[in-house]
Image 1 (cartoon, rainbow, N blue to C red):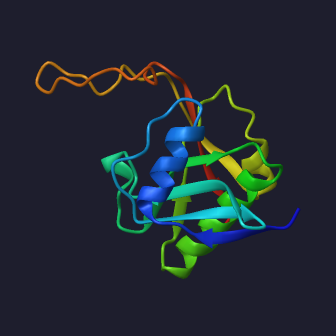
Image 2 (cartoon, helix red, strand yellow; image 1 turned 45 degrees about the vertical axis):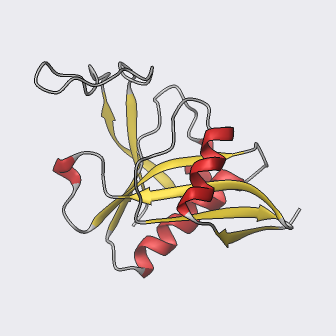
Amino acid sequence: MSLRTVPVTFPQAKEFITDWHRHHRPPAGHKFSFGVADGDVLVGVAVVGRPVSRMLDDGHTLEVTRVATDGTRNACSLLYAAAWQAAKALGYRRLITHPQASETGASLRGAGWRVVASRPPQPGWNRPSRPRADHGIDHVARLRWQPRL
């Protein structure tokens, strides 16, 4: 097994996420996306964009909004580590992600990330003034992770 990062287009990343992600649909947009391949086979993708929370969108922070793999060992850790390297190379000072609190975080720890905050379950995006459909991902506790600086 020889894992390496590879370029992918946003449509390619979205298709991979549709096929492989356990509980999320593909994101609506991104700043950049890339993949990890084992030989010539794409085994994972990462999508990095502006922070979902407007309070964290300070112009110096990006968020890993999706990571999906086919289960290949170490692919997730490689994606998280490469996302931080790419974000730094682009001049960003901070990179975050918000996986569900029930996930182990092994790939994040393996990439040198740490928990910096805990978020209780949120009621979702639906409000009387702007109705939104529930996609089954609301009401879930999350942890905010970021790489060690």
